Amino acid sequence: MSAPPPFDYVVRIEYDVALVRNRALQIGREMGLRNISRHSVATIVSELAYNLVLHTAGCGGIIHLIPLYQPPRKGVRVEAVDQGPGIADITLAMQDGYSTCGGLGGGLPGVRRLADEFTIDSQKGGETRIEAIKWDR
Figure 1 (cartoon, rainbow, N blue to C red):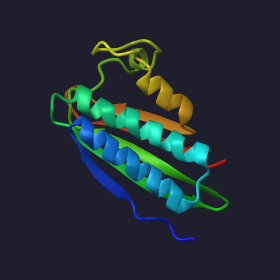
Figure 2: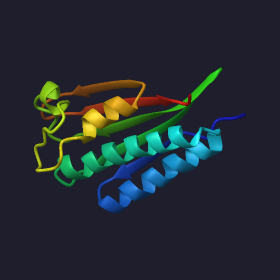
Figure 3: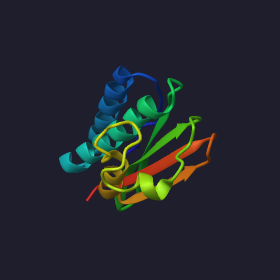
């Protein structure tokens, strides 16, 4: 089975969140991922994309969807990249219930729980890059 091509999408408004989420579901179907894995990827994408809308002062960012085939495994790597203000305190941002914008504070901790691999690299006032990989089981 050949992998679908990688997909990059600029996210600035809420409508973009829905579009990139739907593309994540489509990639999962094309790869033959199980339903639970497809929807986990879609949830990861939704959370990270919505953060691009909320936390980048209107600048948005990019979601990269990269299909992964490493036989016998297959999965999707989701990367969210922005040039926003950065995450001031990553440890605090990863705590359930912490929010800088009045939300529930479950987005990043939820992504970490859903993902099989998860990393954050953020520079104050510079690039933030969040990577989450979900493997099909």
